[in-house]
Length: 158
Image (tube, one colour):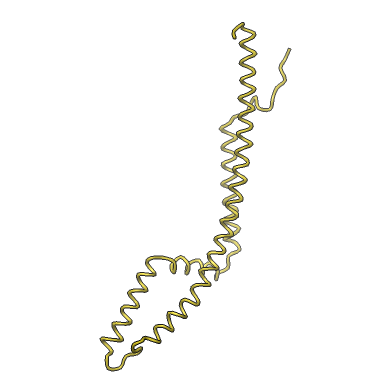
């Protein structure tokens, strides 16, 4: 009596895992392409501004700029400063920078959040596939266990 063949009898688990990994990598690549393809020049510019404006280098550089501005206007140009104390012109420049930089950084952050959401959805999809693979592995192990019990019975072992 020939035993009915299961679809799990000839499964190579490493091939299944490699195929799943390849599928996830391809999907991640497509997500990156999708978000980069739709980016306009201004979007890329806002990402660069956010990258620079949200760094410690920018903060330290800006502190140095402020110090130089104050030193030049209080010490070197004592007779006729460009921007005398209380540095109203400097305050205007800082306000303009903040009013432009903040929305640009928010635009970049929103794009990044949408991309991260897509990646999270892909991660969930991958987790579901992993659960299916785990289920398949368990079914395969159960079938092997049944076969071992059957072989032991035929050999008279318990």
